Length: 144
Image 1 (cartoon, rainbow, N blue to C red):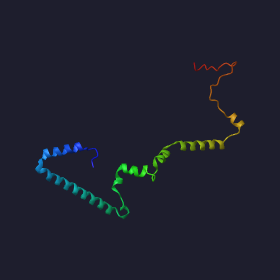
Image 2 (cartoon, rainbow, N blue to C red):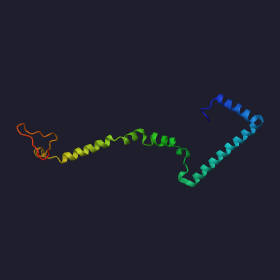
Image 3 (cartoon, one colour):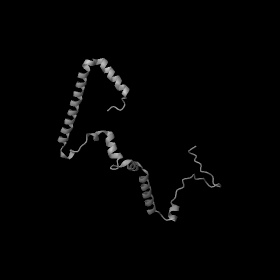
Image 4 (tube, helix red, strand yellow):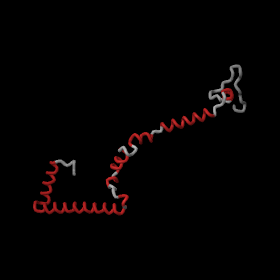
């Protein structure tokens, strides 16, 4: 029930309980605590049964442990029934979509390709235009 509590801690708690409540009141206290735990378990079982009956027959096999986020992730993501970690990783990887888009753009560019002579006449140089060496650069008198 408590995996972190060792035998030395249990002995310490028993000695502390005997010192605080005394040997004459300790059995009655243990009975009261056990009765409270029993009533709490009965109450929670009745509440679960009532919720199952209110939900209807399609939720008859509903397990309340599935509401725990860890259990939900373990059951639906990490098991083979769900996507799995590889499926999630592949779904979030943009490389495949980017490759498809790049191929579509290349295909559209190839479909509208112009002849080489026509393409050469319409090209625009992205470099700096330098005048011929014998030519004098233009001079704007209004700009100076």
